[in-house]
Image (tube, rainbow, N blue to C red; front, side):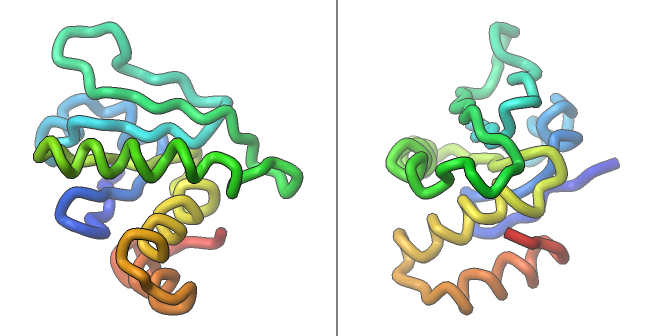
Length: 130
């Protein structure tokens, strides 16, 4: 079973397997899901008690504009935090697109350096390679 990594008390990082497992989302109190993979559906959208979704049409390719979506990502994470919720940020494997978004969020919201944000995510998640 996949387990999301708690990066901050309201911010989790994981793979599509985490996003797919409704029970896992409930157990971790996940209220919002940031889906950073064009190829992955919003698994529970439209179902009873579904989390709120932000689906980014990002491919795992160097030419995709990851920086261009930060303006949508950061307010989504902040709105979950402000509402007392928790966000799962995921892509296919949870090590590239989603990890890069989480690292950028830490740099923006916590004024962390790239190095500090990268190593915090690496420590909590165990693997990342944005």
